[in-house]
Image (cartoon, rainbow, N blue to C red):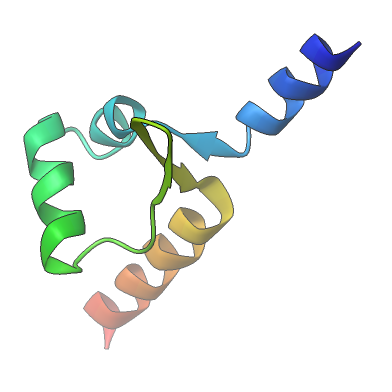
Length: 69
């Protein structure tokens, strides 16, 4: 039962590798973006950095809105 709960929670977060795939860039670029504060959030969980999908979606919408203005 806890395995299925963990799987449901994992769907709300992306790893650095998954974020890189989402934005079609290298993992090192995502790490750099996080370092300079370009990409939102990212929370450290052990050795991993996880990104909330909802936060990334909101950031995408904000970026798209800024490009249109």
